[in-house]
Amino acid sequence: MSELLLRLNFLLILLLSCVSPSSFFTFNNPVVGLGACGPHQIQAFTQFKNEFDTRAFNLPNLESIDVSNNRVSGKIPEWLWSLPRLSSVFIGDNLLTGFEGSSSEILVNSSVQILVLDSNSLEGALPHLPLSIIYFSTRYNRFGGNIPLSICNRSSLVVLNLSYNNFTGPIPPCLSNLLILNLRKNNLEGSIPDKYYADAPLRSLDVGYNRLTGKLPRSLPNCSSLQLLSVEHNGIEDTFPFYLKALPKLQVVILSSNKLYGPLSPPDQGPLGFPELRILEIAGNKLTGSLPQDFFVNWKASSLTMNEDMGLYMIYGTIDLRYKGLYMEQKNVLTSSATIDFSGNRLEGEIPESIGLLKALISLNLSNNAFTGHIPLSLANLKMIESLDLSSNQLSGTIPNGLGNLSFMAYLNVSHNQLNGEIPQGTQITGQPKSSFEGNAGFCGFPLEDSCFGTKTPPAQQSKEEEEEEEEEKEEEDQVLNWKGVAIGYGVGVLLGLAIAKT
Image (tube, rainbow, N blue to C red; front, side):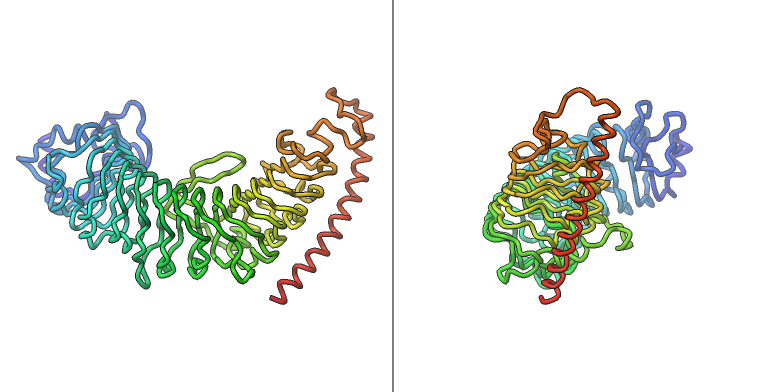
């Protein structure tokens, strides 16, 4: 080891992610620092710390160290912060519990600019950050107490991620000058600071899952680069923020599970703005009113599929998406597709036909509202749709046959409405469970037991001759229904086109 140490004076970068036990400095992963460690790999950083005597040797040229994705336990050594040229430290995904040294000032004089402590077991108060810090992330730890006001003196800081910790108290107003701020899933209280000045650099603001109250910041339109806004699961009591439509780059808006009230349609009853919006989740509020037929006309980005848009967009952030009837957490939001969740509000009137313009939609949830009228024929234009939930409304009429031709649709729920007629027998519809159609007194056909010919659907399998005869009759009936659907769809499409042309 001593011969190795003599050469460390020239070391610039130290990467110890998942080091093989047979060769201390041999990497068995070509992309170091990204792969998870196997069960037989050692805690290389611990070995390095134990065998390296910092009193006899130093690392004057070391600029970056990465020991992430190991099983390093114990405390982060104090000598690490005294390395004169150290600028990047990646020690996430380990079992670290704290810092050596008792002072909260232990990091202040360090030269570190990028510090990633994610997914450890660090707890207690957050130490004061280095004066040179630019990027700091400590998500998935156990830090608590107030966010230290010393952060306000870190003028170089642009990215701050304190998500998934136990921080309490208010959000410091000084954090409004950051590029990315993620405070998701803490216990923060008070209001969201309304301190965004003209041309503020903010791109992503996530304060979801806290105990915040008050109103949404009226100064947010000053953040012309804002792409993601997530305020879900708080106690925000406000009207829908129509003023955000002025933001030219806004792609993701998550306002679910708050106390939003009032109409969702703009005061002038025209189309809702948001030309770049791809994800809008406002479930679990008290929004009311009806939506005009041209409500979605200006959603230009959502009307383009990934192939048409020639882009694949990733936004730094996490959202909870209700998808195929389940809630799931999606990290690093992919905005090449579009999702809409208006569920659990008090919306009424007809579902706008302009919803069919949003060809990038993969998930649409309008459940638990008071929508009336027919299911829009234009939904058949959503060729990328995978999840469609219209349950618990007051919809009437039949299910458009075109929905049976949506080849990607894996989840459909139209239960608890006032629908009637035969359930279309397309592959994507007949594969749904019976519960997706229950609560509609006028429905008949598979998968329900009520036959459309006045008898119960026999549980036993039919003979081959009976199946062939029934299939021939079904094809003739489908042809008639399909032609009716085309005629109706054509008429509605012309009327909608004329209405849009006049606006």
